[in-house]
Image (cartoon, rainbow, N blue to C red):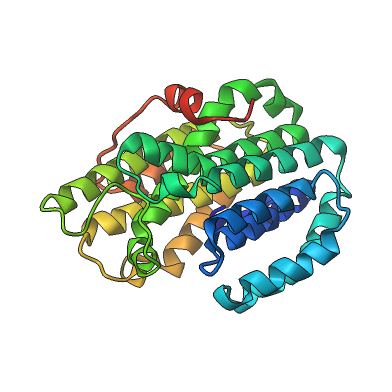
Length: 320
């Protein structure tokens, strides 16, 4: 689940902020287990599925927490270790929610754990189809989580839930592809790559540009997803708009500096984020204003590759 969400979650209506905040922590716990470099693939699979099972029954949770904390400690940073130690509190908060909210969160973590467990598959991603499946497992399902939680808050959104699910997957893939492109060098240091691109490829730059265009196409579809949301749900719109616009700005920076060697070189500025924050705060209800800012963020050089979100959803989703 994108770390960008941690910055934008407070924009949501209070009850939705609580639900999404808890889901963020649940997903980060799953991700921390998957990232543990000193755990072999079978242990990762066992512990991710074990964690998902505690969302159906918490029996044995505290004992397991002590065990998993020890296993991931050496490969996790201070904040991740603090989160892992707080697993009983995070899961306890989850159990305070209505049954339908629990179901949505549990369903998400279960799908994510199963997807992340396909370690052999993700060890060599060699085509766009595999990229789609990977992005769904770690981010597309989060898009489905978000729109499902929003629908529990808003009856107007619940009426259109089925038609919004494909766009929700596209929203998640837009953010994940942007993060992959941005973090390519950090990932290589860990010995992983999430795109079918090798740094020794003679046409590497052209392939990177293609994936920038694919990610940008997803971002534009995500804007359509947001514009379909009720104008009265300004907090939800603000949350989604700011997250998606930051992805577009990042893609523009990557395209302008394709030879970057560190993510800090293509990082968007605080001034840019602040400008977006206040613009969407006051004009996020207006679809014409959204279109105006999307063009401003995109600049003249980004060119989208538009793909069918319905076909991608049908291919990758395990939500229903």
